[in-house]
Length: 497
Ligand SMILES: O=C(O)Cc1cc(O)ccc1O
Ligand SMILES: [Fe+2]
Image (cartoon, rainbow, N blue to C red; front, top):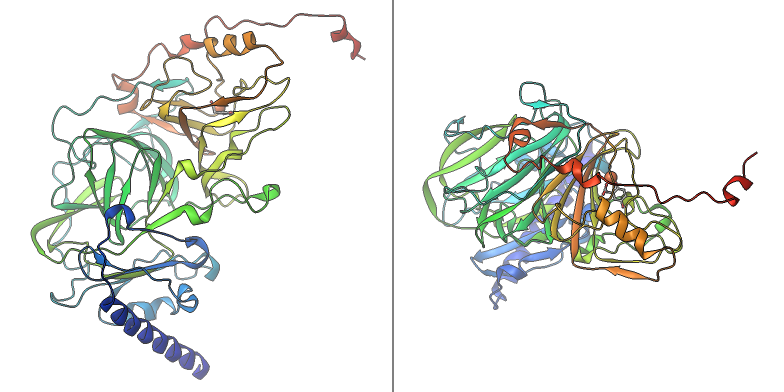
């Protein structure tokens, strides 16, 4: 016990040193930095990251957190009692394994305004108006089982002022945020920035895929500018506000309950390839030091919206460190893998992030991309094969075209091929591929960025999505006219017993 106290004491001394160093570094800060430069690269999963804002908005300096502070220095309970100006959104149930520990320490300003921990707000009330199109518990009151191949055309911009919260609509999903198992897939269409309010998702983590319009997402850890072609991850419990840098704006959101995204294991691929840890960027600490009478925190809790009023901005964090934080990733940094001789690789080869279940190798939700790449396979039907899958596949298109769909699958649109529902290239793509013959050389797929949210849990489809005017009623017709090009030759029988 004495040994443990000594260890805690020495950690405290180190933390005090860390604070002193922060102050002296602040004096040297000269240059102004722009939002675009605010993100820092971190191999966050292994060691954690830190960011300090030295007190003046737009004047900040980054520094590398010393190794000893990248690991959680305190046990959970001491984190909360450490220093008057710190707050910890934690993602560690008390009995978690240490290696699974996700932690975060926010340093709140104590000067010139008094400490404002996030608890200083009026009671939560149901938010009026709510958003009846979102939910987080999938059952027959809000969604249906449907094995049909489904496709949606891109949504129009809203015709009345709509921010990110009001522009969210649940398309499909499975399980329950209450049970901490499952996921929801939403789409958003917005034409105005969130004003005087922040969003906080108590249900799960958001993976946001903007398709049209850049977003400036202000979080408690700093700001992330996220353009189409990039993705942002907002973990459960962080407050954030979405400003539209371009209007209108639309995109896709995967929400996962009870787990977090991680990089897939590389297995036989080895050290290099797919998404590199160094390309995941975390924000630089950023705060606004002003009072905000009537500021509202909108909390999504059990799929319903609640609102709590406070008189200050929740973005009042001057420094933070931890490995539980918002981050972003540029999909063009992804290093795709593919077949180099024959056959067609399963799309899992291009998994950017995966949210695991308790069963090894079985994903709650994989985020997979189909980026520009060379196709070189010989004697192979190169587009996706016709298939039925035990996983359910929701696809979206960020820009360009998708190799398996010559028509109808448009940027901003979506498709859902549920568990064991047959699908594959449309007739036009199939015929074009057959026409090209067997012996074509390398060809490059350019101007494309499609993605897939793939899950082992079978999604139910929301009423909103099934009744949507953007549902493509004629989707099934894209496979009409598929015919066999098989010609029987004598050699076909040679291998028969
Ligand atoms: O259905 C789809 O278009 C996605 C997909 C692509 C691919 O190359 C292989 C399998 C698969 O499900
Ligand atoms: Fe598929």
